[in-house]
Length: 438
Image (tube, rainbow, N blue to C red; front, side, top):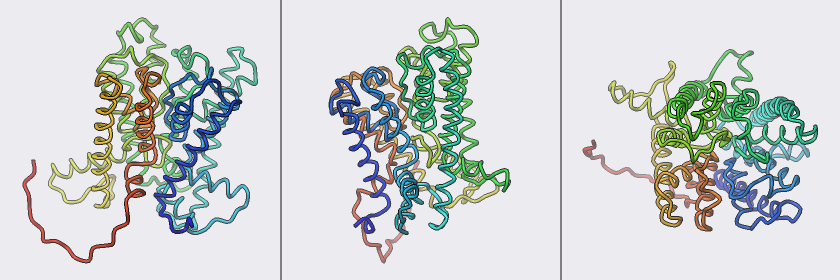
């Protein structure tokens, strides 16, 4: 039966299936206390879509089992549904069909032949386990210094390592990360995990193989360079606009200001962790962070947004137009022309979804423009930051934000292709006629 289903539809069905499973597991009496079906659904979507938005307090609502379920959903959502399913099949020595490998290849964005996909999946699993375990060790050691006990320290360390690498932004600490605002050890470890997850598996595998091959793909370069630029913009803008803001960090010592600037310059690139109340930030800071959330991270990563490569291509298009060049080039390579349309489509679809959803949220929940726009963009970019709006959302607002999170994680084009009816290829062309633009 599944052999006839297209890869985009399988991916969408996989994410939806895990959302349903997660909702049921979180609603179990030994998973949570006082959690409604709607809130369980919202948290499941947020976890599978690696966002981090939640209408309830996680530590006081979920039991240890519930937190394990939450971390598991985040891990599966971060790896990708089909990739995680393939790993599970390999662990139980199940046979994998050619169609299955094609679907996994599409989810991973790999140009490799299907027979090489298993090797790629092995590298993805190795990198994921290595990065998360290393992060968990550092975080466990740091939490142990707080005197919470070894088992609690391990639990906190593993949970935050998974949610940080998967760019989810959930925390199982009673007070969240606010007490660690000036803690360089904790914030740097989390920031590194967030950045690693946001680079995407193709880039991580490329970097993993770099010592032997000494070669970076064009994709890796178009991820690493824009990511570095956006990181500098995020850190510098947060420091510039919040340095003297008494409501956020104006009265903090120098070390805390620097730590907060670095950490909150990283998290809008779709992690959602926060060491400061975002409702206290200035409008210029929120404006910059909204743009960063919209851009997001790299393709085939644990983050969302329209992706840094899309913005890089838009920039290359502008440069080519200004120079009068017909081809897009970067780092001595020619960019395929068909990617131009895809980049413009992603930008247009993303902006349209955010506009419509923001307008709907303003009407349904009577929210001002900035809080509504910030909430919707955070959902679309699968970030998890909020101006304390999420717990106050109406039932319609929660369903709307859940839908935006789903679109942001699965991918707008993937979702449209999955839902659209197949059309027969046209065997004729229409005559061409020029129009005026601009």
